[in-house]
Length: 175
Length: 149
View (spheres, rainbow over the protein chains, first blue to last red):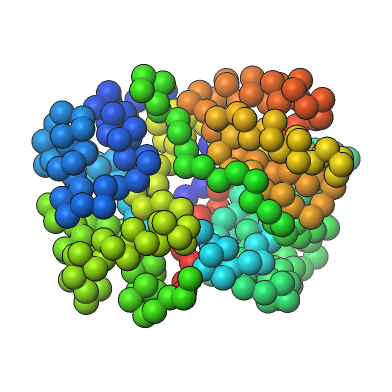
């Protein structure tokens, strides 16, 4: 379980240096599909392969890298019913309820987000993924059951089309 | 694309991590019961087919000072495609999904500095003439981005 972190907190002290930034630029498009991928990255940015591996390990430990691995397109894996469930729950109980909802094994992301009253009263977001619509609605029912009387209103927004899905291209100003 | 048991095994296992060793594909292949070259060619075809969107490190941008937000718009249906095109032009817009709701366009804005988020939102509002609702995460309770096949 991830610990609760405020994303809008500025991280002032830099936990990465310029070499890390070059490493991020070199790997954000993906890992080379070569028997020795870290050597290829090393040649690209002018450090040793050992240093590439050590820096990746350090960034993983620091949480800058969540993990290294495969990122599937869940639609292509058959998860076609992808519902963003949104809930209006009492603010004073949101942390307790968020932890509970987030702990459900079928919830992939769970966040507190601001309301925009009156059009948008929802403050708790939980993503559920299922192969079929009915199956997704069953999962939504389980969340509703868990929230009980603290559920002051909810909706499910199913995605109908991916309009854009690019890898994050953040650190490339110098490229 | 039809998956065989090796494909499934690769997807399920390599969502969890990848070795930081000199020959990581060989080491991963060994625990998957296949060969280095077979693993590399399977990954290549899953990337080509779009089954995998990426293979590599997943960065948590806010840990190095960058910022994310989720933003939503209520786009009139007859303008939807042209507004999608306008919004997608922004390199800061990383993902954009259509959803079946009055709030029908949902996208992630990612920038290096928190201050740039507001600037991007303003530019999108000026360009499209439509209000952008900023919904940054205030707390994260869980992220478990793994899909079993």
